[in-house]
Length: 78
Image 1 (cartoon, rainbow, N blue to C red):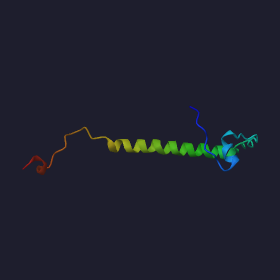
Image 2 (cartoon, rainbow, N blue to C red):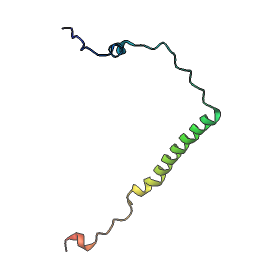
Image 3 (cartoon, rainbow, N blue to C red):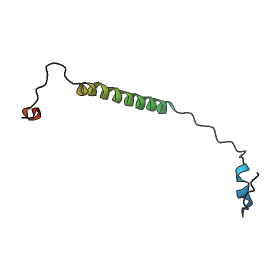
Image 4 (cartoon, one colour):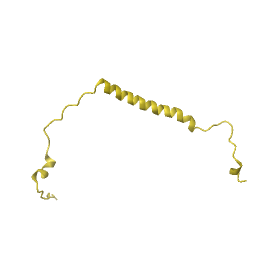
């Protein structure tokens, strides 16, 4: 029912799962105006690149719906 822990040669290893630090991490530094502007510029560049590739790539993927395309004679089985 209750499993006993295996004997550990070092006591600090056995108690490691119960250890909680009482030292608080230092507060985060606020981002500077330049860093915020750089992140915005990077994000806008990525979005503009994706939108541009979509605008330029969509016509290349569409098939012309005007006149029917003539098949070469080799594909007609002659």
